Image (cartoon, rainbow, N blue to C red; front, side, top):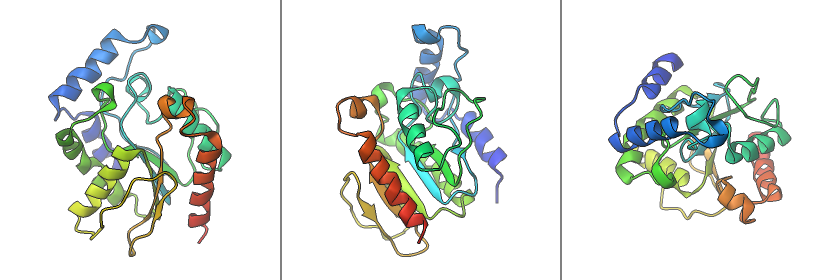
Length: 226
């Protein structure tokens, strides 16, 4: 089996999708005014967390001025703030904030990743870009041998994870995207839980509240205690 170091080095060096390569580099070059003194990561972002985790959390892609800036999943933007605070309240994170790669954050029994590793324009990767990136998630799953529950954040993450299962001939039926849904499959497939993505668009409009997210994490804890 390959090592984490081999996988992550290949992720970081990936240049498969020309549109994403150009966009991530453009964002890193132009920067946001608030971060003009930062040296942006500007590359694909590998997964982060406890490599013996029972919980795998799958998001959409790095944020333009979050993970694309900091080089760590769900770090440095409002989505990361919301998710990390929820992880901390549920006992999965050492601290409630995720600001930069060297801020001391540690995850306990949880691992963060995404279906696309480069920031896409308008957060909309093409179907082919998703397909190109799916192999990295598959390889992470092979290395994360203890995963029992998967949390999909948002529709694209949900559909991307299911597409991966079907590519592996898992016999997974078509399933509706619904916040709070829980889908149990035949062993050894992990249970799948669904949530709206903790994006600013969802949290500021009230589509996803702190209480809703805490309820999802309570559900995850119950599943892991079985």
